[in-house]
Image (tube, rainbow, N blue to C red; front, side, top):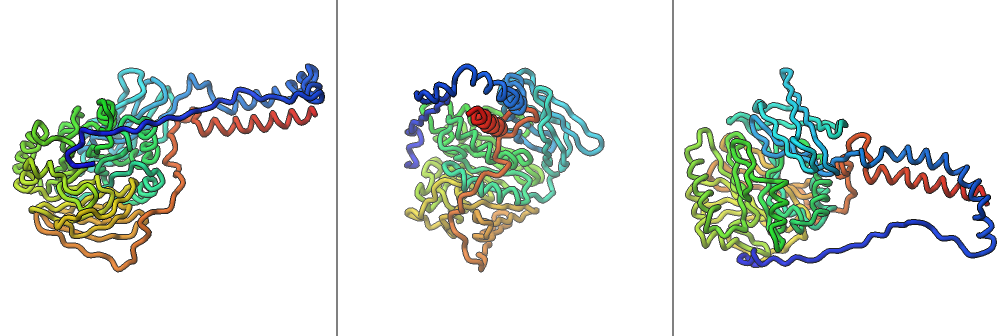
Length: 473
């Protein structure tokens, strides 16, 4: 895809078939006919019925009255004093969220009506404080999770960066397992969470893989081109439902760009596919200008899917250069630009802008393209970043999916990179396929019949029926 053809997306069609087994046939022989005579059927039913009744009880409650959480719960718009908890349930219903914390803090919020997708705002929280929460739907409680609010301005913090996980669930799951072990206050995603933005099954897979991770750590996302790759607005509408932009007041906005502050750092989450001649360009200039005078602010970090520099297949984002965005970033003292789009690790500095391309969380890896003189380190590898901010120092560990170190880097303010590569031998660039962890399963409310739990008693029922039938032979 060229850098000037974002509006010319092509969407592949997908299809599938499913067959419902409604019954079985029996042979036409006389022996078969005799075996299935009315008398034999009567004896068969007398033996099998108790098994059938027990199996029905084991399957669980009537699905009409059961409930399961199909996405989430996950955190959004997490700040010093508030958080938004989102989830999707299998059928329209009301949801209640209870939050507890230190000093006997208790807060209960309920959705306004019965619906499938819920977004519940919890406010009145304190900075740098850990809270527990639980979700109740149809009178049934889910397992509880916890979160920690953003710290005060002068506190150090950590976050993880990853992106372009679409297309390969196994690698995505392997990366997520490593991120779960990383000390991080929140997550930054550089875009392309799914292959096609309006594909419900791909979104379901994303949330299943990241279920456990997103329940306790807020994810801030820069929209990717694949989230918008549809001939109509469906992909954008879907993305905004799950990850709308958030402003300082903690409220969601129907925009594909926005900013948030964490301690001494302000993050600008941009839509790289913009033309950069209209509203987003003016908004960015205004926000960066305001940040120049923001009390206690030390770092400005920009996150967008297709960044200004890359030695990968897609290369530099020429729109950013053509419309003066790189100049705007430099003039407003942006510390770092984080991007994705090219499926690789690329770190460098160009025109006074330090950058990292981190697009290695599962999409097919790209080899080096034409290359750009701004690149200082390049590796085509599945990876993620562990970032620590302490005062004016930003430290970054770039890690492969195995956990091994690609390189360790740091910088102070607007100073240049200081990096070193470890002596350890690089691991395989492609991790072995992994099975889904428990966190990748659909989160079911206790008492609800999920697809997995319901299948087990059905298999047991079939076995019992076969035993009963054989006893009549």
